[in-house]
Length: 178
Ligand SMILES: CC(C)(COP(=O)(O)OP(=O)(O)OC[C@H]1O[C@@H](n2cnc3c(N)ncnc32)[C@H](O)[C@@H]1OP(=O)(O)O)[C@@H](O)C(=O)NCCC(=O)NCCS
Image (cartoon, rainbow, N blue to C red):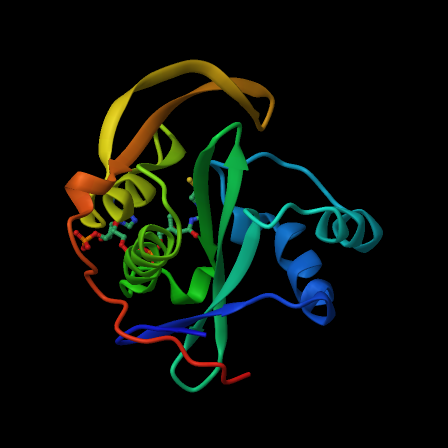
C-alpha cells in the first residue's frame, strides 16, 4: 500500500474486479470527458490477466479504508501514462490531487524513467488542476484525439519530467498491509 496524508493507494487485486467493473461502466463516475464504453467483467478479467507489469490499477482509499476512486498507470510504447477518476460524492476534496502526487512519487522512486504523461479533455478543468498541482506541465493540444459522447474531442497532453519532480512530495513509506 502507498500511504499518503489523507488517502492511501491500494493495488487492485483480481477479486476487486467486480467493483472496478461497476465503476468503469458507471457514466457518473467516468464523467463527461471520458469515452462512453461499457466493458464486461469477462473483458476486464482478460485485460487484467494479460496486463504487462507496467500497467497497474490502484484504488484511492480514505484512511478508514473506504474506496473513493481509482488511479492507473500503463505503458504507451516506452513511456508511462496515468489516468484517474473519483466517485462523484468524493470529488472536490483534494483526494485526486494527493493520489496523483503519490503515484508520481512512486513511479519516479521505483522506476528508471524520465517522464510521466497524461491526457485530458481540453474542457476538463478539474483534471488539469489536479495535474498542474502535481507538477505536470501542459505540452500542447492533440486535436480530435478521442471520441467522447459522439464527437472527436481535442485533448491536452501533460507531462512531468524527473528533473521537474526533484524529490518525493508525499510518499514517505509503503507497507504490505492488505
Ligand atoms: C478530475 C477528477 C479526478 C478531479 O478529482 P478531485 O479529487 O475532485 O480533484 P481535487 O479535489 O484534487 O482538485 C480539483 C481542483 O479542480 C477544481 N475543480 C473541480 N471542478 C471544477 C470545475 N468544474 N471547473 C473548474 N475547476 C474545478 C477544484 O476546485 C480543485 O481546485 P483547487 O485545488 O484549486 O481548489 C474528478 O473530477 C473526476 O473523477 N472526474 C471524472 C473522471 C475524469 O474526468 N478523470 C480525468 C480523466 S483525464
